[in-house]
Image (cartoon, rainbow, N blue to C red; front, side, top):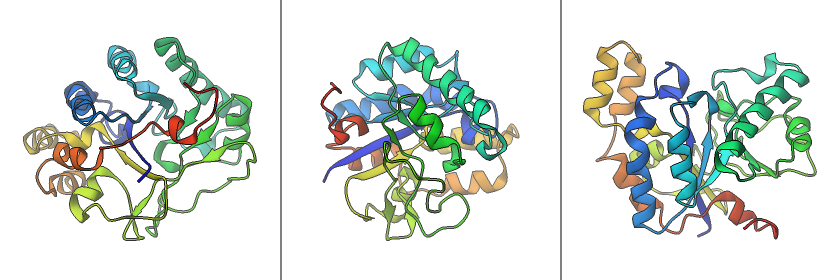
Length: 249
């Protein structure tokens, strides 16, 4: 099975709160699971995590993982921005990551899977190779077929699904099992806050940083998310390596 286990590296709870607790407390443990399985993946970095995440981003890159961009402001609705504003948003994130890693950033995943009519144009102009901004799922809301996907230059890399319905996130796999469908390559995603312990999640809830709904969803789990990652991560490759471009080393 050709697959890539990817991480959306963003502030806690999708930047619903401006806290970097999870990335500070889970990054090294997540990397240990990849290393123990001799696996590598793609980390889509939201650059609003900077400057506190700079050393972690260097560490992720030095461990052989691909660094891609997840934009800068994770709560930004791209449909509210004109072409120039969107260009500046994505370009600034790309440049920040390239300055840190000294490696080209060729992959993009839009925050919350929300694209706009200008996304393809901007990505092409900035030299991106692929866009992983959609989830193959029958669920409504953000999990829907990718809109505005008209590029003939970009490769679209969709997140896979489970039982032809649920997006293949680490959290969903933990709850429903590793029944990936939708063809190859298999693309799975997760977040640093997925890996917090129940004690940590409850502590954040008690400090009024997350809602009861979020608390309930993240307390629903079988074992630990680290064990789930350990089960699925074997043979994972960075997306850039799956695409097999000759100039990518």
